[in-house]
Length: 226
Image 1 (spheres, rainbow, N blue to C red):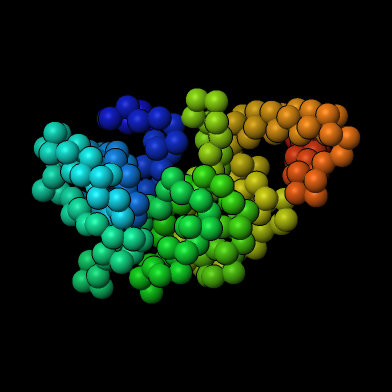
Image 2: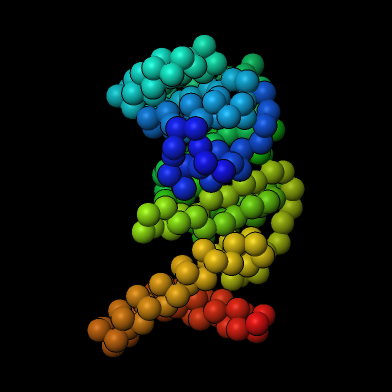
């Protein structure tokens, strides 16, 4: 779905995975594009936008004022969920554009009964998936999105228990079920790059070799499905 603000594929995917509900928190809202799009698409009646950077928060406020949606947004400066109170009663939260370990730190201080999240880790997606599986999150959607020449993981969660194979934890389960084109393109690119590294260095480090093994295994699954 094309966004009203003409966001890139990464931010559009985040918005698309958000439910239509009363109140959504955008944790670390950066310049406020996701916050604004959630209101413009009527995904939420109210968005609480938090940001520890005063400069970024001010840019988000300017954007909201420019497009006349500021009355529907509560802007709050602070780290993670610190600016959120028990009286806010948010239904879902977005945590995007930061590393997986930072997202984990934020989740460790989430409201007690909040499990509906849209997460977009810039790195360490495997660590984030492992944390989610160990802490009563069920992963509903976990897919790669291509934006320009880069690939990004976007994850939607809810409350529950979940089991995933090692390869699903490494790549994200729904890439294997309904994201074939983007995922296959990613696998081919990573296989080529990792094999080039291996040819140049003679041997890969354990982390990269593990990744190459999983890439090859995933591509074999595609061949078996043909």
